[in-house]
Length: 88
Image 1 (cartoon, rainbow, N blue to C red):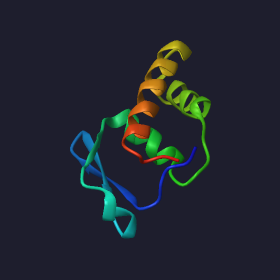
Image 2: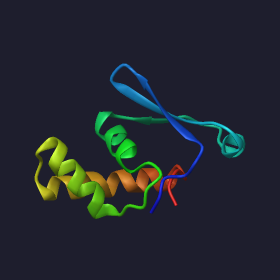
Image 3: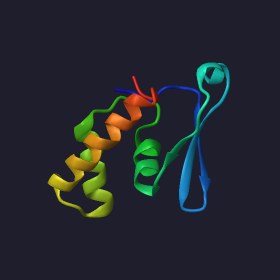
Image 4: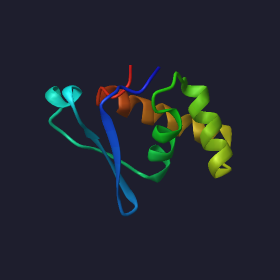
């Protein structure tokens, strides 16, 4: 997988908003809200190839959580990102 180009992550206090900019923004008519951990993952893999295990490992390392918890969180997050059409 890879994050789609044309998105900029903006901070709004403790929340983050993914905003489409440039030509890629032409078909995007919504804002994507992310919490701190989702934003951390987005920034960590932005523009790079990644898979679920990459995200799981990043969460475990950054937040000291178990693999089981990280897998559950990543599965949910990837479904959200796919529905929002912000990853390939």
